[in-house]
Length: 107
Image 1 (tube, rainbow, N blue to C red):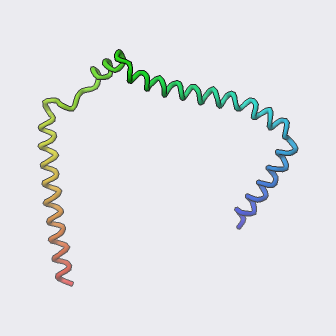
Image 2 (cartoon, rainbow, N blue to C red; image 1 turned 135 degrees about the vertical axis):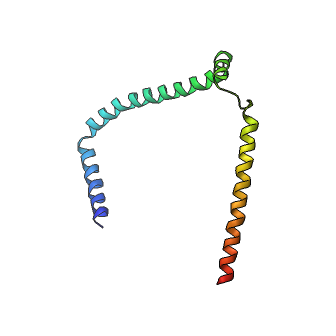
Image 3 (cartoon, one colour; image 1 turned 90 degrees about the vertical axis):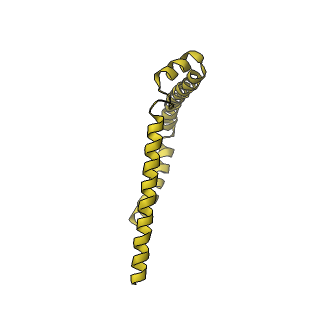
């Protein structure tokens, strides 16, 4: 309840002070809008540059040379290891199911 009353008091006080300081508020807004536009434009330009950089052949080749491909000599080893872990998970699930069934039969 105290938060609700405090919120109402703050809102009313804010409206009163906004009416009293209307001209300074507009001056602040006039100064803040260009800064927000500049920062927003800089972020948009940076993101656009990243997108263009991905499409340019010069930059794309350089990134491809730096990043290793997934088809290496170790890929079959990792696939085999993944299959081993999947089989182990299936074993553990079946053991857990057996334990659950045994507990249900006891009850």
